[in-house]
Image 1 (cartoon, rainbow, N blue to C red):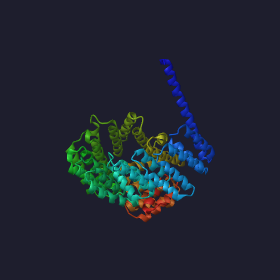
Image 2 (tube, one colour; image 1 turned 90 degrees about the vertical axis):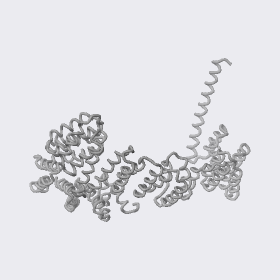
Image 3 (spheres, helix red, strand yellow; image 1 turned 135 degrees about the horizontal axis):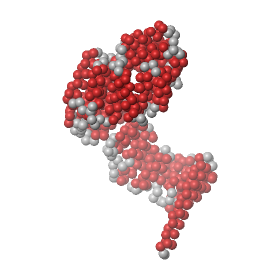
Length: 604
């Protein structure tokens, strides 16, 4: 045969095969449509055709038999099964198909005989073992599927060959103890414990964790050289937010396997984000003390330690002057140790924030950030963040023009993305403070479409706030006084801010800004740690101005106060419930419902 002819025949064969495959797929889809709509006769005809065209296809055979059973054409189904058994006597799954037919006809004892025949005739061929187990599984006969895998494993002389399959079958049976047992077997085959964590998280309830922990303790004793079991035990503690136990386990693994503190550091970050600052301090301290500067995590751990201590001291504004001075000493000590350089740039930023916002040393904060600006080789985002903070602190110090210049520089350098949006928002806020409301309102309108949800929401609030109050007061006098008070509060000049806010009530009683005045005063009292005064402001808003925009903020923040600082769960629940019942369209509603459920201890 010459070359061109051979090539033509090859192409023709490929095209024919593709056409045949395409037509087969069409028949298969049509057959499925018929079957799903209950037209079993039409489906059976197509499945029979497909089975005859592909006699080795197990799927077409099974679908054809299922159609015959649904049509109650048991005689023909039996004939087809027997014919298939003659062709493939080694395919023991056919006994199960026959048993299912007998079961459907009302002969359970004969069906069980066929099922037993299938298992008794099983050979070590992995394909046969899997096919038989799958056939039992599809019929929801999980005990027989389990028996098949266990026998197959014994026949093959390979331990733990079907651990994943057995774990899944025990799960289907609701046998949690054995499900855990076989999932834990699989841990030894995995490069990490993450896959097992994913499976267990999907299938375990909170009530199942004691059984998992019991088996893990046993595994750790039996196979101490495998870290996965210790990791899984640590993971169970994290799921239950028992961070002290999780940390104890992480430290033990770190010591046992002579690690570099990475495991403990990752856990410390989880604990910090969940605001358990006591255990976060313990975790970061472990790395700093036990690994020192020999670990690559030292600098980040030291930073995490300072952040945790700062959060613990400043959260809810519950601190003394001595607390602040002690923490300041730790910042200074660390920067003296590590130096002021590009490596410690982020920590210098955080120290400056601490000086400005808590110690109220604006000049010191500005000096730190101005020094930082002079460093070469800083990432542009760090430079931008430095300028944004500097702009804030210059504004707090009364230098509006330097503040505007810095914000504008960042805006110019970051036309796209959130960094530029933060700068534009700050500049718009500057115009608002200065009483240029129309320009500020235009900028806030543009920022409604910001990529940052936080900036977008704040811009929407400011835009609506200015628009509403400009419409109510054509002279802008009231809004101007309020903006001046807002700026004073931002500058931590709380006495002057409160006096300005009080003057609005005196000069313009029953003004549309009344709820905003109360809300701003509440924020000032919060910073001054005058809890009773803050509560009074929130309650006045809730009682007198339930329809105003500040009501839902007041409700949520008051609920948070009762939950986190005052530890009054009943009052907390009442407020959260009011939010998701009376303000169910509000952005706080979902979070309020979630927190209510957690406090209630059950599912609504």
